Length: 450
Image (cartoon, rainbow, N blue to C red; front, side):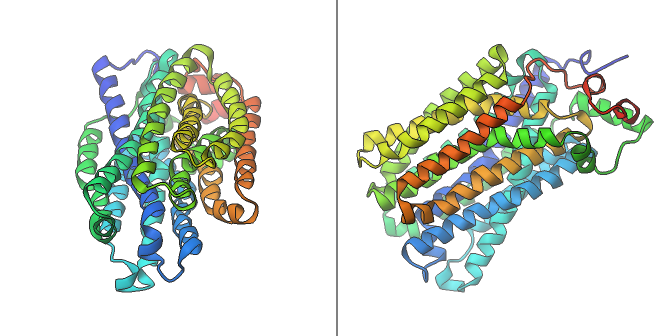
């Protein structure tokens, strides 16, 4: 029988797949993160002027969190498209939706011009961004994983993992440049729009690369088998019937790094400027340093995951995160810019050590017929818990009990990942073909279905 193991893509194809995953994910997350930076720096006064102070900041971060509510829905919608239409179709659709929403945010009038319609429109467009990014990461991770050699899957999975952080770096750098070249008044008047409008160029580049790709050999094999033995029309029902445990394990492994990522890269920017008194440019510079350490850790974690396995890295990173939760704010609260830099860098380094292994792990734990749906649902469920909740409740917790409350919150999130790491089986070297699904499935009827 011919399987995807025998249909190895050429090195030229693999390079194009890696480039498409990296550049496309970079563009998607650039669009996604410029919103987070703007939410921390200018949106409170632009779109919520009537609230003032802490209430405006809380409202701004609440709109940031709206995307995380949309992400599971986006994961479900685009996961279904990926399983029924093709992996490539989701990559093109998510990038297009993200680009349109981002540019429209850049053109949106402030609250002083159109009143309550400004925050309403902002929420709608942020929801659209959430739908897009909800399908993007899972689709990119799945796409490169189904092409990659099984013994180097974590190495190839570095493409979307590094693309995520590259998007954050590019967004931070863009805001840093505008911050250094404009006065505060100019930046708040129109300078903040520049990073959003520049998205047009990046989206066109990303689409050009992705449109030139073919679907994965694994998906083509699955479609050929589906013609012979049709499977369920709804991958989501098959997913929760056959692998519900894997959904929650996948979500649990991603909770910590998503929570720490957004606290370290987004919330601490606002915390440093509003609570500790650092300037905007100082905190953006701190972020750039932290992003460098995140890059290094992602590369290290991805390479080690092919040698030692996914499970040990996720487990020990989760344990380190529990401890670091009580170190992070202690360093930041000293008021020292150097120690704030260490706090952000340490947080993002722990994140990076987890991202690479989880990016490889997530597609590996689901069967082919609903792999896109499973990866999207699990990742975005983790995003909802780890990425949406902390930025929204951080301000009330800080006001009620101080930074120790934030430390406890982060420690609990990290503990979820520790438990998930203990619960899952090692997946290093697993085949992702339909034949492998048939051999390893715990469902006695699975062979008949595929």
